[in-house]
Length: 460
Image 1 (cartoon, one colour):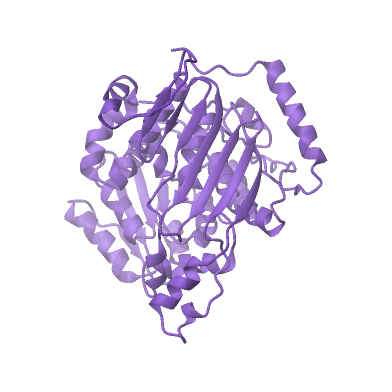
Image 2 (cartoon, helix red, strand yellow):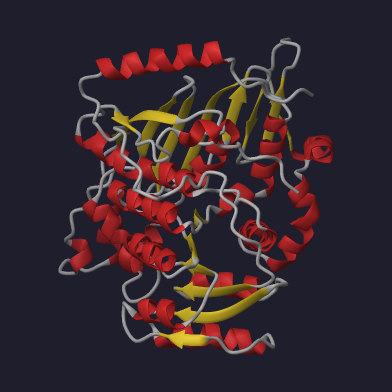
């Protein structure tokens, strides 16, 4: 199979100029896409590779369920030393430290005094990388502090909440020459890796359209009042109306298309929300009439739908729904001129000769597809990842790959600009919803340098 061809310069310039003219004519468009100057002495981080590390000294900010999972999996890897752990709750930080000693490792330094104990950790303990698994509003300040302390920052999704926070992370990464990666684990799922390999080999031809979602019934989080994500995550449904959590579905589709990495760029979106019924109804079921959660105004629509238009004219559907009684799905669909790949369940429809397609290949019939196109990274560590666990093994593959890149001085699979662009769907969707679906322009966090960046290869 031939590789997916890049557009000719003439075709690409024609598309770019045409879309620019369209955007100029959209009076309702915001100015979020306006250029922003790079800070003096800062350098572009698109293909940045740090000096290789013989061992990676890792610290953790946030050691609850997600953070503790990262600690446990990092302890399985060669060349990793857990040197510090920090959590607002002392028992969770102590449990993470105990996990290290039970694994026969040296006890890490423990920090848990207050919300800003992480600042002391960053100052007092030399570290190469810090994994941040905290409520969303802390991602940006903790990521900035980590890079300014000289360590690479690895943040849970989303990278940040506001566009200004995303710009701040980009600026500090460029200034400090430290990695700032959003840990989008879904990009390392078996299905997603399979599709990436097939796309890169040109199996489905020229890409035209993608579909991405985070559809996950999380109404049970309404009952989390003292611990768990529901303590803080429910507040976002009170304060914001848009796609609150776009990157799990969008990340893989964006990487199939090479967005922000040489092949394409997300240019603008429109977004609409359905009525917000489900959270209020759940509060009525779960709480007495005088309970605070019973009396909150839940403004986030149960379903948010956005359409992204890329610079090359492709479209991406992105949806968010954590309220409706609906089974989990990320959609994960990518369509091209010779076929379509889709998830939930994994399905393939190929039509290389244009004869027409009327049914999916799925289930046991997919074995031949896996035999031929299984991603080499999954072939290498997939079995170990399944034993280690973590969302079917995708967490382990992600962490393994992060450590491998740091130890070998390689660029990471996800750069700061991708994390910012994928996360930007949240505030842009909010702005579009608030303005009746008006188009919103994506900031170019790369400042035009995305055209020079290598798109993600099929790494092994």
